[in-house]
Structures are given as C-alpha cells and as structure tokens.
Image (cartoon, rainbow, N blue to C red; front, top):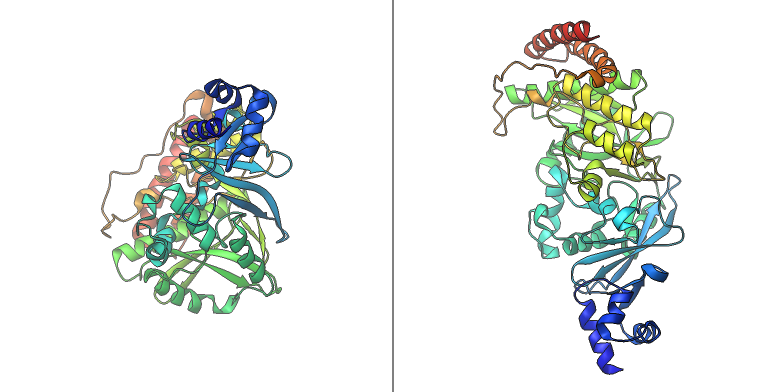
Length: 455
C-alpha cells in the first residue's frame, strides 16, 4: 500500500492524469486506485466516470492549495461560485460549485487550465493603474515591480491579499470577500457633481505620484477610479482619464483625444450601439474624461466581464482583428449573429475614425450564459493622432480610412455613416484645437467621398 501510494504521488507530480492511465501506470485495478486516492493526502478527483482524472494539489507559499472563488451580483450580494485549486506542477483547476458555467467548454470543460483560468486573467494588475499597484505592493509580496513579470502564483497572492476592488465581479478568497462585505456596511466615499473638477485635479496628481485609488483597470492612459454622488442621491462608479496640463502641444493633443473619445461614444449611443456613458470636465489646467463603469451597479453591485484577449488566446491564439474574431466567435457559439455584427461594426467604425489601438484588451464581453453579449464600447478614439511616447506631437502620413471587400459592405456602410457624423462633430467642437478640427474636416471629406463611392 505504502509503495503504491508513493508511486501515485510521484506520478501526479507530473500533472493531472486520466484515471485509466494512473491505474495502468501503477499496475492496479480501478477499485484499488480509488482506495489509494482516498488514503492519499492532497489528491483531488476531477470529472466523473470515464472522464475522471486525478491531480496533486500544490502549496502556494503559506496560502494553502485551494481557495473559494466568489462572484458579486448586481445587488451587491456575493455567492460561492467555485473553488480554485493549485495543482502540480503548474496547473490550475476551477471547480464549479453547483452547475458548471456554460463557458467551460472544449478542452477546458473539466475546469483544468495550464495557467490561471482565462476568465480570471483580466484580474492581473496591468496598464497605468496596474503599475501603480505593483509599485505599492511588489516589495511586500516579494514580486517584481513590473507586474508583467508576475507568474500565476504571484498574481494569486496579490488577489488574495488585495483583490477586493478589481474589475468585474470575481473575488478570490475569504479575506478579500471579508473586505468587500465590510465595505458594504457603509456607503462608499463619493464626490458631489459640483465638486468633481476640484477633486479630479487632486486625484490626477495623486495618480501621477503612484497613489492611484481604486481597482487596477487596464490601459496605458493615465487614469483613476472614483464614485460620484448624483443629484438624485444615487451613486455611480466612474473611471476618469486625464490629460497632461494643456499648456503644451502634447497636453493639448491628449485633451483633444479625450473629447474625441467622448464624441465617439456619444455617436454610438445615439445610434443604438451600446457604449459607455462619458462626460468631459476641465480643472487644474487639465481635461478629464469621466467614463461610467459598466462593471459596477449602484453603490455595491458588480457585473462580470472578460476581455476578448484571454478568450481568443485560450481557444484560438489568433489575436488578429475584432472582425475576424467575430466570425469565429459566432461560428462557435460564443456570440449570436446580432452581437457578432455589432462587433464587426465597432471594428470598422474604429478603423474609420483612426483608432489604431483596437487590441483584444479593448473589447469586452459580459461573463454570463453563452452566447455572450458585448459590453458597452470603450476606448474608442482616433489614437493614430496620439503624441509619441516622449510627448512629441509629430506629423504623420495623412490618415486614409480603410476600404471594404464586397462581403463587408453592409456593415462598412453603416460604420462609414457613423464615422462621418463623428468627424463632423469633432470639426464643430470648440473644445478641440484648431489643428485637430482642420484634420477632422479633411478626414470627413475623405470619408464622405468613400461612403458615396461604396454606398
């Protein structure tokens, strides 16, 4: 018995193994294997009947081998969704509590993953705010100050210790949930509508000094999170982007782009394309773009989502274009035809307004039943005009809107009409600099010509 137990543990150190292979490797019957598993410490059973596998749990520092995964609903109440197990040598098992979620499919239907499950990947600290998070906590966590270098174990420890206010609705571990629950006993600190400009100016300075409040929302644009008290008494969670001081060409250009992002979202919403609600404010010599968060509801409610990046990387590994991704997501049941069409529309609209930053982290899907729904559009702006990394505003080749192939014409025509309306609004908006408005007039004429030619 002891020899077989030692053999079982040694075999499972290589990773999860189907039951039939374990029994064959040990030279024992399935009945004997079941007795061995019951006697072994740290061995978990995954799946049922012929699909059964066994794995050996591994310790993550001093934090154990398994942790509860909670989700927080729109009403602010949490429920136990799953347990997350760390397995030898580097695998992870997401063990649902109750019914298996519809998005555990294909090769990962049993909840086994070689890294953190893809739908938890967006919890990793990333972007401007993620770097600030890392600067504050990396030394205490024993991790690199660059969060891009954190492995899954390091990310897990950060989530367990500091993961109470992350994007989406997942909360990992009892300690983080306890902080969420304690925070819900009193309303969050909120900023009155009339006081936003003054407070945002202070928060921008704090963010630039690495003291970013709130969750580690992704993206490189300087930003912070806040909670706003509406005149009605309702609370609204927001993400606030901000420009440099507008007394330089770089500051003015970023200020222009924030207005452009606001106008793009406005055009989309007016034409029944879901996009985040935005507002432009001025204060302290800066321009602010306040974006209402789609992953928060009221004071304490949350909404689950996942960006396109980990989903595509896990199941397809393409990372090509939103339009191409829409085709395969519709084909495989991740999106219905209506949502896939909206995804293609956003891709063409972004292309027609010069959005050169439509990477797979800039489009999200709500994490509920399949087929998924697209989250409201965000980060939609003409990034082709952004300043260089060093702050210099350079003259690039004139922007030329992309052209469709015949099968793409129907969605392209609609996108071109929306893009023309966007450029018209940029050209007419006095908050935008004279040079940027002149460029908007040029692109508007080009867009109209192309729309007439292909429309």
